[in-house]
Image (spheres, rainbow, N blue to C red):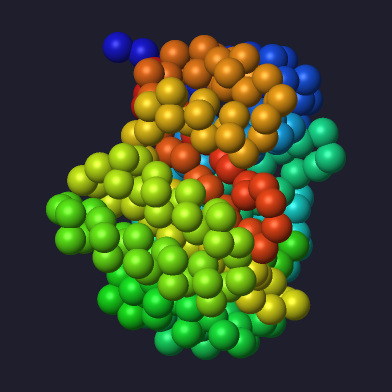
Length: 294
């Protein structure tokens, strides 16, 4: 059995390999991951956008007396005000805490994610106090079922906040209801009908009988006109087809092959599709490591 140090080394090595494959300078990211190396050794989710120019590493953060001391330098490196904001936002409603470190050649971003049984109105009030533009957010969140299924809230450095809403898909009826929620929320946000059509057409095959997640974002300027959908455990063939359709001529198969190969990933752990008012949508693909292994 590998030690924690060996597991962390395996994680860092695969991230370094990925950075080399895409020409991303990851040493600054690895230097920061040292602060959460114990958690990273246990589990990480590594994600890349369809532009393949940034690497995001998310890991659950062990709650304890030294948590602020450990994640403080990460937050400080990206946004000196973030940690104080997040303490107000997460409050006592947080069951699980995640940190996501994202590095590209253009800089570093840090996100803190609080998951649990969230309360929509409470979180919207907290966001408003923090300066988020929340006009219209409640109406769209309700369309997604957030009154009963809001499960997470994220603070990203620079002042971007995300609400995460679980979508149940255990049977045909639940999957149909999810499609209807996506269509209604997408229309309210003004994303293109073509993207709504694609997302709802893909949903049943990507979600199968597992939960999917929808998300809304807000900044200080207001509610973002975008709707995110996340599916878990997606076959690479589906991911390749999606990227070829959205980004033709981008040498998609080869670029995705570097991601799957660096992590020996048999499937994509998660696919995140962000619907927008203009074409094309954004897409992000994630793989995972547990104890340094796929």
